[in-house]
Length: 574
Ligand code: FEO
Ligand code: CA
Ligand code: CA
Image 1 (cartoon, rainbow, N blue to C red):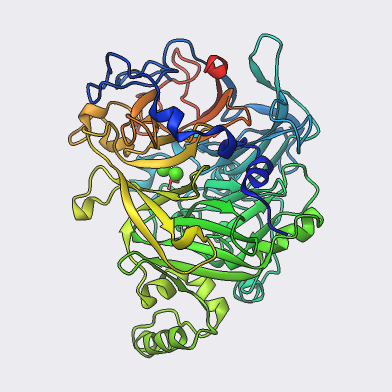
Image 2: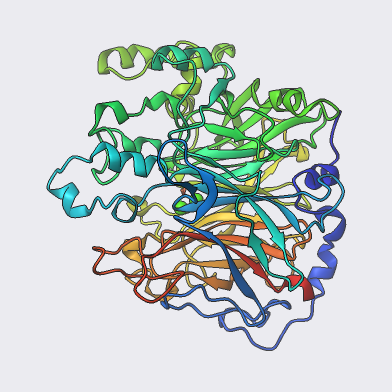
């Protein structure tokens, strides 16, 4: 059964966009007299854009407020089974997804619910005390340090409530509160590469999850969390992050780099979906409004010169089935890689004879160079980058978030940058499926936004749409480059609103500026758009030492900087 787009969006808890969005109304919005960006005479009607700043603050437009819901190290109210203290909120929060609880299916107004939070990476200086000097001196990490780092990543489920005064707060010791880390709970695997992963690792399941960057939500109210830089923890990577100093703590690489699914309600066991391929997964955006109702997912591989992918489920999404049955849609289907030169999706399918011949030709060389062989569907899914490039998929300038426009189904893709190609500011592409058919194999694309001072932002990373069809863009200028050319004019990393229609279309209007060294990540609107949940990731992340901290956010004074999640309110009057 096909889920109409409106119903599907409701399932995701992000509103009845298609019904509410009227491009003509947007186009007719009255232009205002001035723009603080100086780029256009038009400015948004619901906030006065702020200017770039280097202040160590989370700065918002007048009339908006941010309430802190949790920060790294906060105790959650339950004992940690692996040590003599409470479970604590993880580090480096990224993707957020809010699930209203009062009425999951009907109410967008619920003011209590569950918030999923990704915890992307440990910051060793803060989490385990392992410094850059320790790394330069090649001092091995202790098992205790590695355990502390492993417990700081993964994800959290928080229970939130909105008080009568309009402020959100996290409830301590609520039964839904949960942590997923690199130490547990264990994840199973499904899909065509599940047996091969078990065979390679010698284990039927996996000790946990890590490198959880961005993600997505499913129609059955599941969280999809994307494992991105899983390779940072093996012997070849920067020493500050590696866990292989202690052989018992080393990770089996083939167990990571997947899209993992977690049930925030705790009913379904956690699982890693091998059908979605293995690479540096940034995020995943779902739709199921094609002609046969198959579930379609778009994904970026966050690395310079890597590709964009699409998954189409083998069967239509069974809308009336149980949640467990619905999620099998992500276990069998076709994975495609995008060829932008020819506007086609390339099937990463061992059963497609002409593609198999290309992998077999590649194998002849790989046997001589020692590269991985592609001899089965499982090999394709484990070595997805190689399989895609052999077929001719297009390398792009760090494809990060992909998000689907709520009104027209086009896919917006953030390309953050590629300094090796002198692309310092990045861009946002708009991909349009032929005949508006997400299940098809042809597409076209256009440039929606080119980063730089003329558009107002640089290095787009996380994307989100609001109910008006405005695109919200969180930027990721590397901490070490903030304040330096060619990024000096942009100040700290920020969050921007970019209209997709009307007089301001393609122009970035700054809504938030983050504290020193941070990235703002994971923007997620509540179903009625009254609240924007936002992560402040790695404030002070470029601090040279604990004595010379570059940020003290959120607690100020001389406090350690802590990644944290905020609820931003003030949208009610929009
Ligand atoms: Fe984890 Fe691609 O940012
Ligand atoms: Ca990201
Ligand atoms: Ca990022």
